[in-house]
View (cartoon, rainbow, N blue to C red):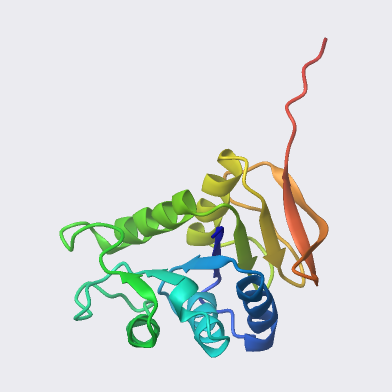
Length: 185
């Protein structure tokens, strides 16, 4: 089974935009990796479970099963819902509680991206946040495709390239195309 990272903005709130791509990807036999933050991650968990795909879902949580180490952006509720529904949940995926929360989030994003064959990002528009940018950068550095569902694609922090119109599982979106190196010969 090929697994793709589904991630995005903590403020993303359009369940219908998430539900279609998640459901189609699962129906094609694909697996899903996602984080455990509020917003897009939480919507991905709900969409996957609602589509009957909990067994194809892996959730990486930057906090413990008890909720210790969770931050204001964390969604302990969606991680527990995923676990109760039969999904695989990796608790403390970003490291032990002795690691500062922001560092655990970054390590969790990098870990999720390292396990995925591609990525799907959900954003309300503008520059991607630090977690989404890190995930996109990790995926692109490995030559993996990344699709974006957003009304207005913005820059990816620390990465040169552009978003071009594309389709993912039949849904219109954007795909990231890295900048090409040019040599003045």
